[in-house]
Image 1 (cartoon, rainbow, N blue to C red):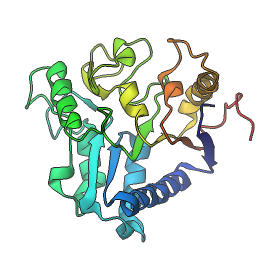
Image 2 (image 1 turned 120 degrees about the vertical axis):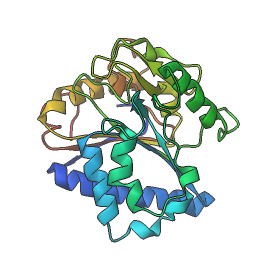
Image 3 (image 1 turned 180 degrees about the horizontal axis):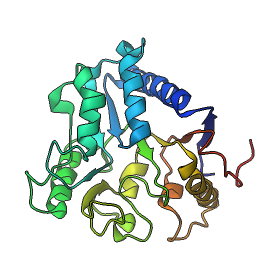
Length: 259
């Protein structure tokens, strides 16, 4: 695995969601203790929805000052705002609407009712990210949450798609996605990897093969022998640490890792 990586396996999806929620709350609280605020990149998917529900129900959730957390998205489907398929909609319904957040610190990716093309959406989002960038031109993400697809994609960076190789602006338009809808917007891999921490969350047997292959790629990344064709999830390498937080079913096919 790559520098600073670890794999943690939980018995079930329910235990996984509860554990990730507790880790997330403590991660944000630690960031606020250090600099008074925190920045979180949200993801979509069923396991993310379970994590968000666990955060809302947690007895320790109020150790975080939620009004001083900036919320971003790692990717978004290019659909109208409020569409049930948007990651923003999922996050608002399962997390943000139940927390005392500052609306000015919630940063959704523009939808089709704001701009005409995913390229325009990526440009607008890149500008917004640039407005909070550090001296190196990257936003100060304390934590990036990522799911992994059965094909090994993270965010909306799919194997073989040109967006995977983008390294200019922080966000990139994605066209011809192999999963509907075909038009999306995603943070680039360098932007995701600029985070202090990145957590890849996987649940279910359907993810097990992708998890194994991606961890194999992560091991190659550590030795700097990574090829461009490697699964996107295997390229995730945050500046501080990268965690693979998975359940037993998602770990069932692991061959490239010894516990």
